[in-house]
Structure formats: structure tokens, C-alpha cells
Image (cartoon, rainbow, N blue to C red; front, side):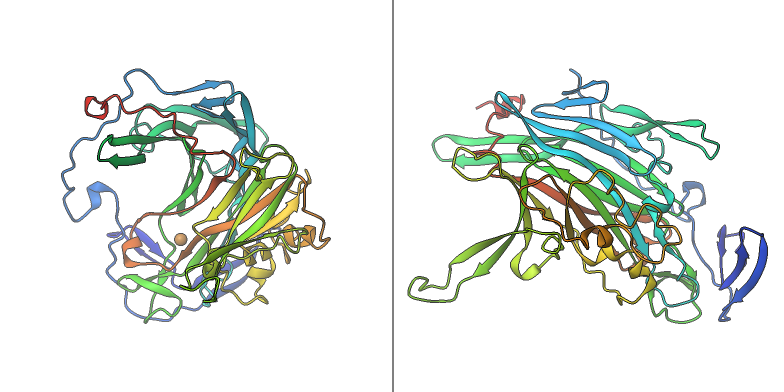
Amino acid sequence: MSFDSRANVIRAAGLHPVVDLNTMELLEIEDNYQGGTDPEVMGEYLPDLLPMRLRPVAPLEISQPDGVGFTLDGTLLSWQNWQLRVGFNHRESLVLHQVAFQDGERLRSVAHRLSFAEMVVPYRDASPDHYRRTAFDIGEWGLGFMTTSLSLGCDCLGEITYLDAVVHDSQGSPVTIPNAICIHEEDSGVLWKHVDERAGAEVRRARRLVISFHVTVANYEYLVYWRFYQDGNIECEVRATGIVVTSHASGPPLNGTLVDQGTYAPFHQHFIVARLDLDVDGQPNTVYACESHALPVSDANPHGLALEIIETPLRTESDGRQTYDWDTQRSWKVASTGSVNGLGTRPAYKLVPAGSFPSLIDESSPAFQRAEVIGHTLWVTPYAPEERWPCGEFPNLSRVDLGLPAWTARDRSIEDTDVVLWHVFGLHHITRPEDWPVMPTDAVSFWLKPFGFFDRNPALDVPPSPHPQCQA
Ligand SMILES: [Cu+2]
């Protein structure tokens, strides 16, 4: 191990003491140092220690002089047509309950509960430095415990409402995390627009309600944003930032990227499992895989332009193990089986994946055996209150995944029932020199989009902006 006081970094060069934590006995010292000179590393990000000047930036302020557009009554949050309850616990951090949309006279259910249930981060480096680094950030560490306080103007900009959260310490005493959850409205560009030569330009600006929290997981930060839109869309975005794990590079790295002199950042993956307990217009729902297919040229399709959508109902849990397919642009529709819309079709919400990637791992690897959940983009189960943790209740030191693979082995029916979707998404992090010494946020997301939930664009009633030029 070397300590470079000028760069203020400690770099482990393949030295690992192996200790039995029950007896505090030193069992072994692994030393796989490959040799090489002590490199010149610039690992600083604090302004006072940077070798360059800070750039000039013009002020940008956001104000809502008449106050915010949402109300908070206890944990009940209401904004325009949306209504939901805000919750929190030590393992999942922010949880959204009873998400519903006021549609005329009807308060219509979209989701019973939305949260993150697991995060699996295997480091994809064959060296002895990283094979133990297969963190379960939720099952082992707990996002709630790692939730950090947010600051006005830095973490959240504008008119902000904060909520505190309470977790417990190792003695069981309560610990308050001030400003753990941020609630605010944001401008989100154009919602809809048309320019007609007689009617002129008609434009509506989009606004979204954002509920967010940040966690610090040792070297990394995850910033989580649930966004609710005026057109019924829900977006969940995760931004990863912080400091990438690095190791001493004695030559060109095989499973990572050189990010500084003699320093490489191993490739790794951040798999996040969102638990989406949707109740689209009530509990009886069926999930359909929706796939686009091009039809061959025929008498009925003389120009070869016909595209058809095949919707396949997922009837059992083995059907519910789904993988994203680029070739068919696969997505999943969660349709009410107890109601119809004004067009005579089933009201639905569609899960649109935007940050999915294959696990790309040998299935005999212990890292995969412990987290088989990462082998699919989507799992669907019938609601069972005790089924909460996709890699098992206690994944620390597990050998196999006792969560979703075990539950779904029963191959229960998932048709016309209260379904839970488990969506696996995240970052396939091929590290870059630009991620060092502190990583600019990398964002991934998924969307829940209404599909026939409404009979037409539900944002027709959004008024024009009060700006004089928007008032035709
Ligand atoms: Cu990463």
C-alpha cells in the first residue's frame, strides 16, 4: 500500500489482510503487487486543491413567487391531477404508495407501491483485488441508512419542500436524517405544440413534480428521481456519481480503463431492481409482452410497410421472466382486466425500459448464483406480502439467490390478478478517463406510460404559460 501525500490518495497495490471477524485472527495476507514505479496521480476534486482555475458561470435562479403548485398533508402529496403518499424505510429509502390520477370525477389507481428492492454491483475484474466486491447495496447496506441530507441550491434548485427521515443506529436508537427527501416542481421543456397557418402557434410548457433522494454508498453516490408528468407519465431516473474504484495498473489493464498514471478503474455493472406493485384501475391486472414485427411483402402488404404489434399475455411466472429485445422493441403493458376505456379497450400502463442491458456473466459465477435476478429485464409475480427482496431477505454471505428465482419456481398464475413487476435496469459501467477523479453523473431511467388509460391526451387542459407572448 502506498500513501501519496501530494495527491492525498491511498492506493492499494494488491495487499489484502484476510481476518476472521469473529476471532479477530489474521488468517492470511494476500500480496499480488505486480511491481512498477509509484505514479504521479491527480486525484483531487476540492476547489482549493485543483491545478486549474474555476470557470465563470452566469447566475441561474428559479423562483415561484406565488408559491408551489403541490400540497402536502402529512404524507399525502397532491399535485395537479396526481396524488400519492410518501414513505421511507431503512432498506429501500423512499417508497411511493397509493399513486393515483384524478381523472374527472374518478380518482384512478395506477400503483399501490413503488420502490427499489435491490441493487447488485459486481466488479467485472478477474484480478484478486476485486472478486469480493459484489455489493448488494440494498440487501446488505440499506439505501435508507445511506440516505444523505440535501442542501438548497446545491442538491435541489428552486422552491423546495424537504422531508426528514428516521432510521435507527446499531443500538436501536432513532436517528433523524434532516432534509432526506426533496419535493419540488420543475419546468420540463415543451409538453405539446402545433403551428397552424390559420390558428397560429399553440404551445404548452411541461412541468413535472419531482420526488428525490440521494444516497452515498462508500465511494459512490446514487441520486434517485421519481418524476410525475402532466400527461400521466411517470419517469424514474437514477444518476450515478462519486468516485470510481481504482487499482494500481502495472501494465495495460485487462478488465478496466486506465484513468490516471498507473491507475485503472475496473469495469463493473450497477443492476437496480425496481419493485413496481402496479394496480392499474384496481388490482386485477394482466401483463402483456408487446412486440413489433415487420410483415413480409405480400398481396395484402404490397409495399412491405405493414408493421404489426403482437401482444402476448404472460400467464404464469415462467412467462413473466422477460428479457429486453431490441429487434422487436419489446415493452410490457399492465392492463386492467376489470374495466374498459371509452374506446372499448383495456386501460393500461406500459413499462418502457430505457436502461436495460444483459448480465453478460457466466451463469456458473458465484456472483450470478447469488443474484440470478440480474438474468432478466423483468420478472412478474402475484402479489405476496412476504415477497419483498429479490435476492433473498439476507443476501449477505448468501450462496444462491433465495428471492425471485425461488419464489417463481412454483410457476404461479399471474393472470388477472394483483401483479408485482420487478424491473432490472441500471448502468453497464465501462469506465472512462472522464470518470476520474470524480465522475460526472451518468443517468439511466425507465418510464411508466399510460396506454389507453385515458381516451385522449390527458394534458389538453393545461393552460398556456402566463407570459404575454404565449397568450395568442
Ligand atoms: Cu459505476
